[in-house]
Amino acid sequence: MAIPQEGERVQIHSYKHDGNLHRVWDETLCLKGTNRIFIGGNDRTTVTESDGRTWITREPAICYFHAQHWFNVIGMLREDGIYYYCNLSSPFLYDREALKYIDYDLDIKVFPDMTFDLLDEDEYELHRRQMDYPQSIDHILTHNVDKLIRWIRARKGPFSPEFIDEWYERYLTYLR
Image (cartoon, rainbow, N blue to C red; front, side, top):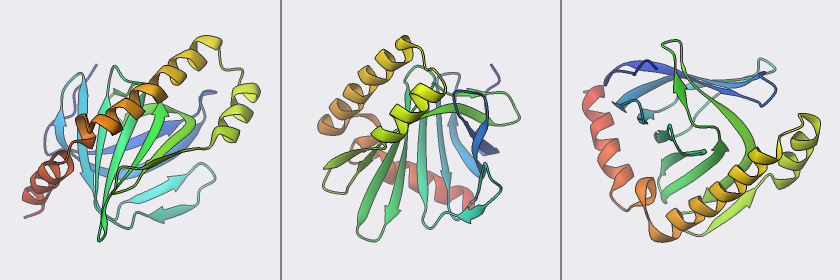
């Protein structure tokens, strides 16, 4: 697998289980790239949906992807604190075109006080039937929802108090 280089600007491509492109983030700055971890930063980047509609992100964000975990985490820096959006997804891969993953619909939204909501269970059920997710995927995702909740409660990894702040500071050094 190729490895994104620190300081490189990369696209992020989200796919669905059936192989269709779901969403593209136009530009994310690589802050750390290894064969196991990608940490990136972006602010006001263009996002293109599968139907061609575009929108622009509203705040700075630090993105955490891991090649062995079935989720990714986006920490969004807002005036009233850090909000996290966690996508249950395949582990990422990077092929020099983009950082890529499969989005499996389930999401966890985490608020600045570290309370959280599990989202899109109905969408997951619909797509699980439509795209015939194997039972093994269902088990993996259930396990990773539990893992994410443990990480949130323990403030582990990207949920640790200093994680987003430290990586955001590094992101700002590239912009100067």
